Image 1 (cartoon, protein in one colour):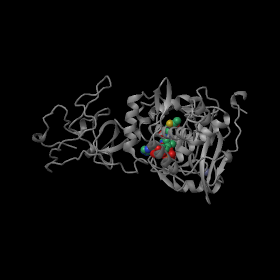
Image 2 (image 1 turned 90 degrees about the vertical axis):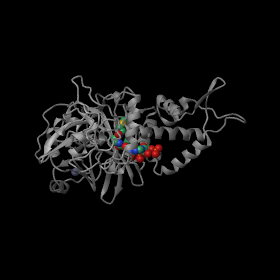
Image 3 (image 1 turned 45 degrees about the vertical axis):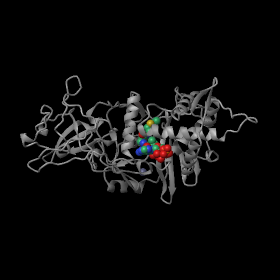
Image 4 (image 1 turned 60 degrees about the vertical axis):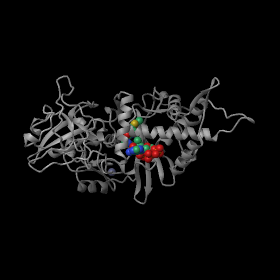
Length: 471
Ligand code: ACO
Ligand code: ZN
């Protein structure tokens, strides 16, 4: 926005930017968030000229990166700009989430008021309550410093070059988190089966495809095409109606397929490419050989449609039972995430081990795991019977770990988060109020789909006895 009348300036003259021409990458200022009347502090990541108009790619400082977006000049509040310093910090007024005062006249239009009250984000931006999740992210970030997490993939092999697209030249690829390119969403839209989905984060799809308005993905083999026509041609040849690998679980319409990242490399790589669109802080791409992929599908007359997946290292020195986990956005917030998590612990039970998800967890990952752990542990407590008359039920942390396959640290952190542990007369006791029990029962009634261990047909493999995952 251009401020045209000096008389209309705020007293705080020094931080006012005369025009957006002075704005550079790294500047911070209040920006109107898409489809809201909120003006949180944002950082300019990139600037481009499009059809004679300047556009700005911004990251909202206190919000998850999936809300990053391109905005126009009129979405910028240039009255409080912080310019980047050489040392990486910014100068000027520090705002935080701002409540802009009355905005002064723009080209003689009179004053424009910008309400400050938060407006819930439209579901198109992210599936679910973005504001809640973003606030949670802020809380998590304050508590812990994020470290990069590894995601298996990629190194697109020659045979995976599709529609004559150039295969990647590099070997296993490292994505630098601070790289401006990988900080920005590069895929506008994907079409997967009957769903059109707006990606959340960067994923290294071939450049040629990223320049198209939509990438068309075969929902069964996950190969990608640049147009619907090309996908239709592919579908004539592609006879897959379910993921490759073994179907190890089926109950009603839900199935799980186990895919070996070494045996089905192209599928595994395409799955990781797709997943990366919705997974952040995954910086390294590895070979898929050391991973197994568990793809959950829903069956109908057209086939087995991918709902979500998790990957798992064949051997984990840190007892991780999940590397990456994802529910495809159209299926999110319906309980499938918890079903994936429940399945991952069911596998650990079959292995006779406890396990934990790879760290760090995303904001949504943490929400889902905390909720799963809390419900699973409360189920155990509520099912406890007194061991004798006038005796209180007695259970150890190890009993809980054994019964649930949840790792000890996660059991303890859950009990602490729920504020259930009390120290009384020299011993730890857990007190569960009637209110918590009622809330829990209500939540469990909502968990309609559950894993039925009788429907899992699977024997764990001891990968340490195999030479480098090759058998
Ligand atoms: N806002 C608020 N709460 C949410 C949201 C949201 N957007 N999404 C899920 N939740 C809560 C739910 O309310 C539910 O808790 P409750 O039962 O106590 O109410 C809990 O999280 C799980 O909900 P589900 O419907 O079972 O989970 P969903 O199918 O949405 O999947 C998942 C959760 C897998 C984390 C999904 O959000 C996702 O794929 N996110 C993107 C990828 C990601 O962040 N994965 C985790 C990374 S960490 C790792 O990979 C180890
Ligand atoms: Zn296909």
